[in-house]
Image 1 (spheres, rainbow, N blue to C red):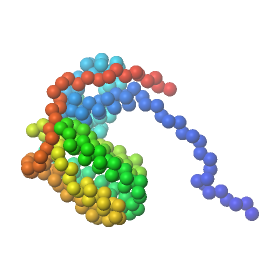
Image 2: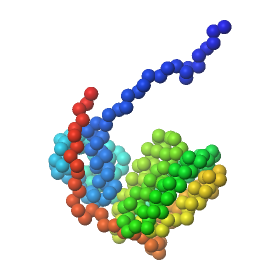
Image 3: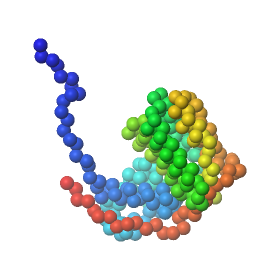
Image 4: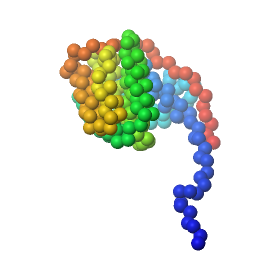
Length: 253
């Protein structure tokens, strides 16, 4: 009798790696400048100057900017052109509510099957955060914090969840940059990071979600000014005119 061949056993062709387009490269540079505070929140996007620095025409620059509008990093203001988005204090609670929905789910999923490799990766992210928190620059601390939460979700292995959290984490950075008293981050590392990792390692998803919830409540209180008793590190941002590296336009195949 002829055996049937499972459909998933068929040979698969190798999918070529897609090359980044000129627009992709512009998006990367614009996003970096926004999240670093080099393009101040609420500030305009100088198309002519930026295009000149990048060595591109205004067409691909505008296409790249529209992508960032869709991501929520830029806004189009009638009569005023494109500007870097500003996130008000009254939006912060909703932002963290959305983050909690994704990150708590990720923590529960990881706790369902705790793996040494994944725990080690979270430990490495926490170690990095602890190390940079001894410094005097806010941006590296903020970067390490974002990297931790990004890794938490990425470990689930869902491209859609990773894409959603990337947008929310970018909005979190903008919310911090939008603070009236300047960009600042917590100096001490919250014990909830350790509690989160330990809970995942112990297979307790609810405890992990609770640690995240308490961490986010504290962050919202700090960002909205309800809790000003936490020691913070501040860094001036947007004091200098943003500069962009020249990129080599990519020809489309």
